[in-house]
Length: 236
Ligand code: NI
Image (cartoon, rainbow, N blue to C red; front, top):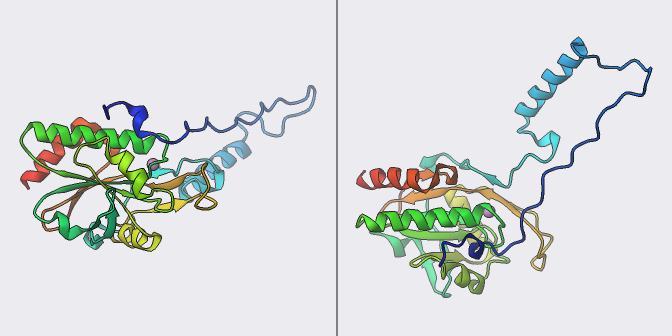
């Protein structure tokens, strides 16, 4: 069954947390530069917080940017157009899905944690709606076309009945992701790199029967809440 989390994850387990710097013990007898309640200490702390919040944390290294939950463009700029290849090798465009709602997740098959659990949520939501006699077509669009081949997507799609998983040339996928306003940044050193990650927007998009963007959900909402909202959004 696709409900087993491990089946989705083709990648290695995620790495542990960042390294903690060593404890700052002062050698005996020496006067510490920063005493507790020293104004300088507070200036440094407040300064650090300000820099951190103004720079999105990038100055301080390992803030997790691997799965962001923001759209790269405002909703009205989402075109929703794509010309890709599905997991059976068949060319597909948004026109193939006109007349029904689609629920799209963007990710990559090697992703060790967030993408697999998001796909489980997608499966749960689709099943929940089906149980209520409502249909939504699940789609997966890769953010990593160099490594997510048709064959790899076939394995992935086999775990959710009805899922259409899409890949294509780098150019075609780039164009599609730009049309959806999906941020992604690959850390792979090349097509053969087997130990890599791709930072990407981790979002579900609900597209309407005319291919229009309706709304988006985040995996952190969980399947029950998404299904509730989705059901309401399907009613319009
Ligand atoms: Ni991912």
